[in-house]
Amino acid sequence: MDIELLYKSITAGDNIFLDYFIIPESISADYCDLKCYGIKIQKTTIYEGGGKIVESNQINNVFYRSKDANDFLDHIVTKKVLPCNLRTEVENYIVESIDRAKRSA
Image (cartoon, rainbow, N blue to C red):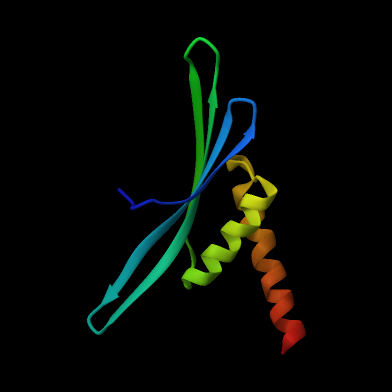
């Protein structure tokens, strides 16, 4: 099982809670110890009477720098991104990052 580090928990509405996680993973070789970082979003909806539904989506090995993963999480927490939109947000963020890098080069 992957190690999940809770980044932030927020309330997205009445009885709807979003948890954002960083998933660090070691990439080891004989002479190097690299890490990569995945992202997970978990949405919990609690119903009166005691029922609840938990949805989650996770993408592993998206970032190779901790700062990049933290910046992305700040971005999606602000937007209250849901699990079903995680892939689209990752794709858009990477494209925007490449565009910013081209403009600054």
